[in-house]
Structures are given as C-alpha cells and as structure tokens.
Amino acid sequence: MTNMADKIKGCLFGVACGDALGATLEFMSREEIRKKYGRLTELTGGGHWRLKPGEVTDDTKMTVAVARGIVSNPVDPIPCIREEFIKWFQTDPPDIGTTTKIALNLLTEGLTWEETAGRVMEIRGEHAAGNGSLMRTAPVALAYLDEQLIRDMARKQSMLTHPHPDALFACELYCLILREILTGSGINSAIWSMLEREDREDTYHSFLQNAGESEIDSGGYVVSTLRTSLWCLLRTSNFEEAVVKAVNFGDDADTCGAVTGGLAGAYYGYKGIPDRWKKAIVCRDELSQLAQELYRIRSKKA
Image (tube, rainbow, N blue to C red; front, side, top):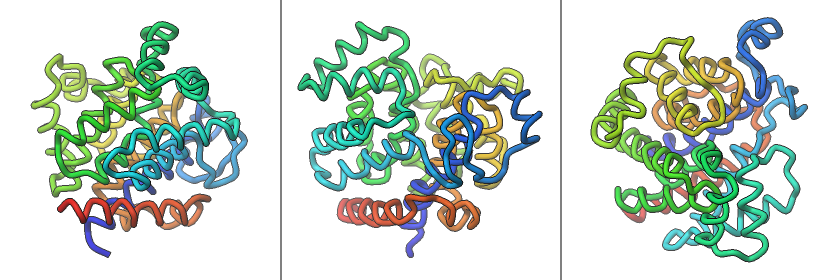
C-alpha cells in the first residue's frame, strides 16, 4: 500500500471511528460525560441512538454517499451524489439532521438543487449553517487534485442541503486543509497556511490561537464544529488523542469526532488509527473498497 492509499483509507476510517466514538456521547454535556464515563476512549455503542459498538451514524453514511457519487461519475458527481443522498434518505434514517431532512424532502419531490438551496435558505435562514455538509465533504479532497475543482465540488456538495455561506466556506476550507495534508504538509502547517490564505474574516485564526477549553463550543453550528476539530488537531500528536479530545466535549460529539477523524486519519494514516477501533467499525469492508476506488480516481489525475 502506497503512502497515499494509506492516507485515503485513513481519512475514511478516521471519519467512521470519530463518528462511532462520538455517537455514544451525542447530546451529552461535558459534566454528564465526566460523571458517566470519565473520559470515553472505547467504541462502546449505546448513547442516544442505542448503537451497537462500531456502528456509525449519518456522518459516515453521508460521507459514503458522497464517495459513491464521485466513484460513479468522477467528471460530474453532483447528480450521482444527490441520488445517493435520496437513496439513503428513503431508508428513513433516525439520525438525520433537520436541515438535511428538509433539503432531501425537497430533492425527493423533484426540485433542482438550485431550487432546493433557495427554499432551504427561506425555511432555515441562519440554521442552514449547520455542520451536516461539513461532516461528509472529505471524499472531495481524496478524489481530486486540482485546487479549483476541489473548491467547486466542496461547495456544490454542500449546496445540496446546506447552502449557507458559512457552510460553503467551511467545506471548502476543510477540503483545502485536507488537500495540503495529502500532498505532504504537516498537520500544523496545513492548518495555519490555509487559514492565513483563506480566512479573510478571521473566523478561525484568532480563535485557534487564543481559545481555551472553556471557550470550545461543540454544537451543531458549522463554524463551531470546524473550530473544535482544528483546535483539537493543533493540540494533540496522534490520531487517538485528537479524536478522544474532540468527542469528549460532548453535544454534537459524533460530528466533531468525524470531522476531526477525517483530517487526523489522512495525516496519521490508516496505520495510525488504533486497531481495536478499526476492527470494530461495522462498515469497514465498504470503506476499504471506496478508499481503493477513490485512490484509483486520484491516481489517474496525477
């Protein structure tokens, strides 16, 4: 396995491991987590969704949908991603976010994604800036090399459900950081170089430099989620430490875990993820297959 293949597989498994670990703690406060678990470090399942150990939520399932869409048609994946979202939506998932549910209802009714984006903004307003498109965007940077193409695809996949400018920018920034990591940058240099170049309104930069633990908000606002994930990555030195730190802030813990895990998995590689976590993931065979297919697409562009 080449280094790049290991990074791509690590990214997908990182999303799933962060999701599965965090799902146990979703909707819990930090105090509730401390009382019940101390500090959760194992894929125990349970939690609000009563999951089995290693079972994943919408974060991983929608990441898989984006990956499948890209694999189906790398040149024009958005229609395929839309169809994958609708297929998943029709399984009646219990853990779907409100904004995503509204958008997929509209898409199922036959609205174009442009029409859907307009309606979602009318209905949800500022609440359309949730983290539901950030959590699934990693496959864009795994499959494509060209920076402008990555920017465009990150935004387009977000527009399907989360058209708010904050969500679009967060998806773009995340994919650009992931691109830097995949092409050999250290995790700190990837984060800071992209923030210095892209974060013109200083939404992330000063927070990451100055915020303490008490200022971390691990709720569902997309900016909060990405800040939490980057904050954890900048203050840890291995995959497990980064993801454990992210999920134990509670609240929207599965998404904070998934977003952190995607970047950490790409940087530390598949080999850097604890074996006990990887073996527990229920969809590990599909993730392995998609990682190979995304690697093939990327290799053809190189």
